[in-house]
Figure (cartoon, rainbow, N blue to C red):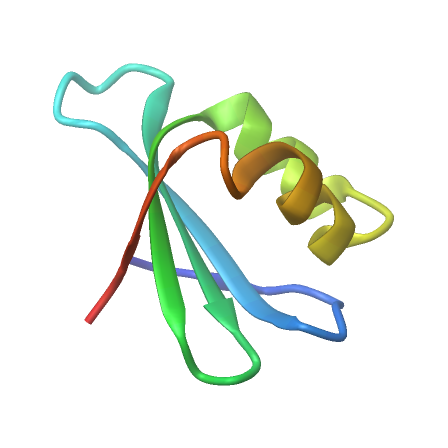
Amino acid sequence: MLRRPVTSSNVASVGWEPGEEGDDVGVLEVEFKSGHVYRYEGVPEREFEALVGAGSVGRYLNAHIIGHYDERAAG
């Protein structure tokens, strides 16, 4: 998955790709500065765009993504 760098003290980059159905729900991938990468299933594209545009990527991630979508380590 192609990820784009973000300005954050904890997050290095984020990416999103549509699901198998090709609709606006897909997989969000987050690379943390620690080197860990996590994938979040069922994330709408609008949620990804809001994450990228947030004033604080880490705060948005904690408030709207982590714990709200199925999470698994990538790799």
